Image (cartoon, rainbow over all chains, first blue to last red; front, side, top):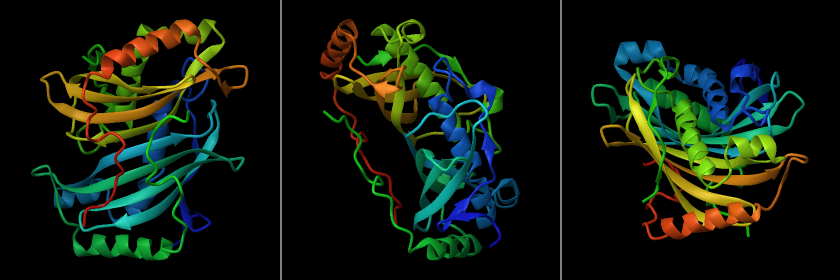
Length: 161
Length: 154
């Protein structure tokens, strides 16, 4: 594959923090990290074979089942970040992955963890992947199988007291 | 009763090629609900702009339950789960105005001294309000999805 990588994780193109995402704290509002994570994964979804063409041709698409963000550092207007993608697990109807938003200076601003579901839009209901999609998902899983699983995956949320 | 925030209408630019509310914008709706709940305990926008302190989100976890069509009117609820001297843990539900559940949220909010920024203790009156709200919310059942870990079903 030709896309950029960092330590075996797939990297998106750089994205810039927009003025309409800045809140009264003078930083990017927590709500818009999700926008960057979503846009920053679309190159991987395209590689797998998903997107609007797939949806129109097959009446199947992907929905997010769950999403969890850990906010590590503030992002300011004009900051540029790339999104890193690591596959954690693949099933017949869903896949699980983790992302990082990496600032152009190299530090991690946030992590994202997502469960993506394959959806038959005539339901909508969860449905098995067709063989060509399953192969693409398994190829990514195989390519990233040796990457360490981040320690925060599976950690229960709660207060430190 | 959990705190209930006011109604919100989806913006057209939040709809994606699936013809529903894009996953990223659920957080915008949940965050507006948090803003309202925080204002009710003395942590509103005015507090952030005048006190030198504010709140940051440390973590947020959404479970998407049912898609929202364009133009939907929704509202969110807010329930405190735990309160510490510098942070609180909460959960939310996002409902369509017709009464069905669209998504759940769970998060941690930090109290921040903007001069750092660094985590800092709540002032006494805010702590009192948070503890009063927690006492009320503790009489409600904790939803079974709180603290749950996501994973692939095989």
